[in-house]
Amino acid sequence: MQKKRNPDRSRGQNLISVFARLFFSGRPYSLIELAGYLDCSKQTVIALIRELETLDWMEIDSFMKGGRRFYQVRRARLPKVRVALTDEELDTLIMCRAFTGHLLGRDQFDAAMSALHKSQQLLHDSPESGDDSADHDARIYGVYRPGAIDYTPFRAQWQTLLEAMEKSLVCEISYQKILEKKPKTSRIKPLKIFSHRETVYVHARYAKEPGKLFKAAPYDPLLALHRFRSVKLTDTPFVRPADYDFEKTFNAHFGVIKQKRFQVKAELTGWAAGFTAERKLSPDQKIVRRRGGKLLITFSATSAPE
Image (cartoon, rainbow, N blue to C red):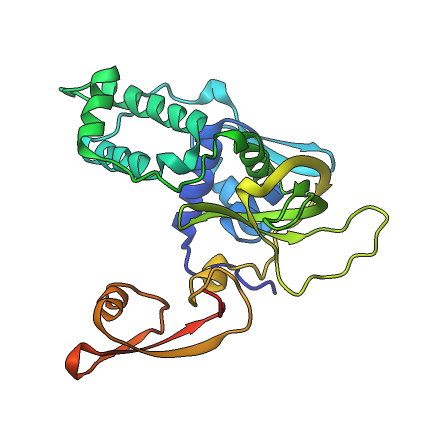
């Protein structure tokens, strides 16, 4: 019997997730894509689809393409409703846009601006719209930009990686490490895109290259988005690894570089003690305050340089 991959998600959460993905995108999704997105078995996805098909106003087409099962909501049956955000929801999105705009790149930031302004215009009694709302937002929120990476030139790579993750297709990439003179070509299975300290990373696993013997790497590649020189989709599908758990990999211990886990014990004083006490370095962190403003901290880490 196959083990449930994500025990923290209820059936109701999975049902809402697959409904939202099919309903709001309108595009076809393969059975493998949905199983990877929900982190569950294909049998679970099929059961959820059957449950959604009981809705009178929702009709889901099922068809085969390239040897894979696809599902798509029939657009003609969708109810024509206009849903606006509440003021509080919109304010939260505006704040998120302001704080992350420098990571999006100019084109994606402009798209986010346009979407939020449209939502503002749908709100009743909204005091701002268009350029006035942009000025209003700028008066409230800001972001410190010096030293940040401009991701505008890397939008094509970003979009291709997103498409590869949604379609579960292997990518052929050209990637140049910071100290290397020339980029190197390899094939990857992109699994997660995340940000850490003003940098966008892609966590992946290597894929077999045609005509070459595959040898598993000791560590899964962690790639900085701005060092991708090119990303191309292949027609090679991959199945999201059942053992992949982003939270356990990256958020269980300190260090974005993942090597062998070790315990850290440090005694800090002065500014360093105060700065560290404000932060959570790992879930198992323990802090003991001592006389004279000293602080003894114990936590687990995976990266000695960090």
